[in-house]
Length: 412
Image (tube, rainbow, N blue to C red):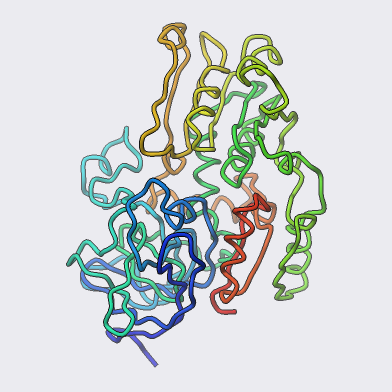
């Protein structure tokens, strides 16, 4: 029976206030309006950005709110003016958009700075009418970055929806909608290391390890990982291996694993050396310069720490070194380095969502993944899996620095 044009009642994980556990509630999800799509979310994962805005440290509070932005699902219905999507299409909602009409979208030099749909973490309403599509007993529930995927159904602007191949396994490609493309693309599309060059990656979360994967695919001779969490360096039995085996036997498995089952060895991502800044009594950039005889050829920073950003820039080789910043700093942070570091022909760049256009590029990224042209093994990134009712466990894992991506099953 079609639900198009009707209000849908479903479960959603609502953040009622900063830092408090999410509450599974029955919410009403209104039909999509002009240029909007209503999506049945099947899989979603927790990203650090969700945690930052849930904690609300240094950010403007906006509650009650449905967080979530890394997800995959199926189109349930479309609003007026939506011509390139239809019910049943497999899609990835994206936290930033591509209207295909503004100067940025039409520019060959700008990939994902859409003037209409650029990421906005403070806006909690839809663009069409300034209202929310979520409510509980008539009380509005705010959106998050236009996606709000911690709900079994959500409404998204069509410009933030990437239509993908129906043959793509939605649980595996879910992280492509945020973390994987952000890190992998920062290396492959922006840093662009040449075969045989050295690369330093700051931060070994999912984004950083995706950046390391990019360096491996590019043929880097040395990939030096920098992180202050020693757990990231340790070898361990990876839950992702178990997850992969269970998929082979078509088993539906929900793991609540401890750290032992949650830390894929970083060397599986191509990393050759590890550096923990806490082990040295001098700046880590000096350590890396000494290790490499002058500095690395490329560095990718994936932490959001302004000090890590400075270290990433100052550890690249003069003359040709390129540093790419990926992590999002705190609002009042300031990047400081001596101008001579730039005058000596080091290059500092920023990368947003891996320099991918959401609607144009992401379908091709998924196709290349399916055709094994990317060299990416998505199973390595999925270290936990929980049913929707246990979504707060995903927050616990991330706050403890355990694992990479926790896959949340919204139909479980």
